Length: 334
Image 1 (tube, one colour):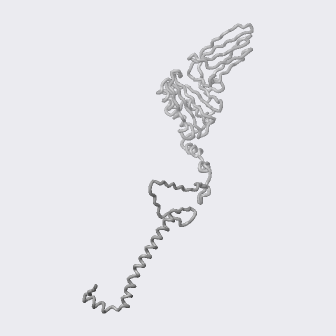
Image 2 (cartoon, helix red, strand yellow; image 1 turned 90 degrees about the vertical axis):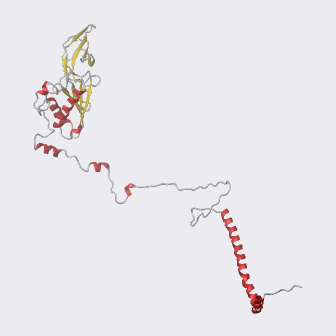
Image 3 (cartoon, one colour; image 1 turned 60 degrees about the vertical axis):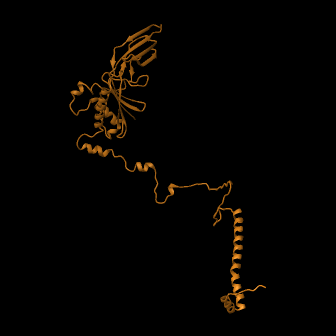
């Protein structure tokens, strides 16, 4: 027979607790246990639902509130995500920008016109204005640099050959029948180059009669004088350097321009505007001589021409075949 022994303190508690009150206490203790079991079941269902959502998860770009909260990759699976981006097409109209005023380039260039008259008037207050033409200067040849007057009768055909001091043929004239009274050489060689003052030229005239007999006449040597020529849209002045460097230049008064350069500037003022480029080409036996002549011509031309001195462009050349005193060619497009 089993006998349960109760501690005296527990016996006192047992006497104090009514049977109905004991049942109520047991019910209260059972409530948390039921709530815990229900919460655990709810959490398990939520995990299963979340797993299903992950399997069918998709992002749609055209819907709002689409956010990828988590992404788990296990193993060696590979995921390729493709994004479709719209083509970037910008249509920007610069002329439609608010607050801007558009125009053409020439509007800016011609905003302030070049005033070439005021500086010339200002210079005339102290002395003679630049850019004056001097028609009384007539030293430069024009039209021809040499004229040949052959006198032969009974000629069936003829040939006039001009050669320079180097022995090179520079110009050839031919014809049939009687010789003309005068053959003019305009200073242009057969290769298009200009004849050079300071070189010695010679000529040979060959004529044949109707029977085929040939007669030759060798003329004396001659030099080409400084000249001006207008040809193929270009105006050129060709002068010798004899008066630029040497005894002639030493005896010239200080401040006085070379007469050939002065006349060349006069003609340039008639053919060229104040903003047109003028080219000065100097050929001499050595560079020192060519550069010295080029500087003399540049300075003296700048004193006689309106506009900026920068429009005078000088090029020099050293050549053993140049005339002993050098040669200067001043030209511009017209």
